[in-house]
Image (cartoon, rainbow, N blue to C red; front, side, top):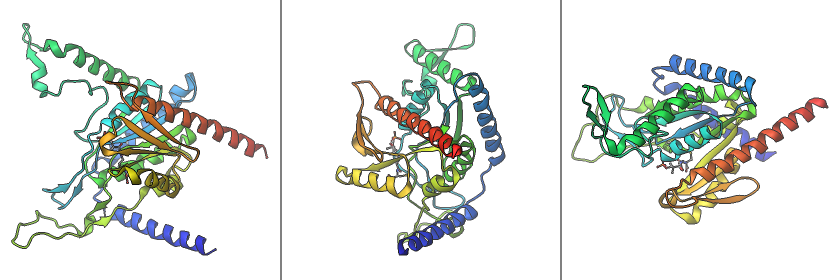
Length: 331
Ligand code: 9Z3
């Protein structure tokens, strides 16, 4: 009884802090456009599903959020995330027949571009004899296949790209996506690989203009970012399959923290990774097991076996959900 009361109070506080976050956040510039894109995308889902098996839709989040320090932002707090995890995972989800909403930080890694040269883009091209432009020969294959794969994913209607920079944009867009994905029930999935800031400066306590330098240093109070994951699981899209990530630099606490996040947020799986080995190995924590997943060899992606594993978990989940719903509706 006392525990129930405690949960009720904690949820109330969370609701209030999330409410305050959304109320004070600067409104999304292109909300109507994003909503329209999502509606069209989800409508495509029924078109594709009519002709073949019911399609699955995953929202992959990728890259790090920034935390502005001023409203007319000159400075901001950022993090290390390159977006590679999200970009390569998107490729494997698309290959497996999923429809993908790729919510990524502007300027971070993009699907199909991972094997392009790191040279500045202008070094990949040269003027051609017919006064057009051609790709320089060493890059021709990589550029051609990136363009082809990207075009084919976009034209197939299976791939929707949305972008963010700030924490405010990220959380608002994620909320709109969850409401769209919620309509797909268990066929919807979240793969939350974005590195989301834990602390931020609330918009209503943020200074308007550039913070001035002074002799005394600068002390700032950052507020904790309300845990939207709880709301995503409980209210926004309670039936969707949800995978979150846990990142630590201390391997000794990683699994403990991942397991506690799984319980706390009620997600279906937590992908635990350690900063320096994240490209080689991850551990997927579910209520049944802790499974170590490693890349298969040099030049391979750890995301290939990871997505394979998660797709199987999702399939088992949708099977269970449809079976369970069929059984209870018979009662
Ligand atoms: C991850 O753990 C991702 O795997 C990485 C991928 C960000 C490490 P890269 O983008 O790296 O390929 O360079 N993402 C989630 C990180 C995170 O912020 N998790 C929170 C936490 O650990 C929970 S939401 O507390």
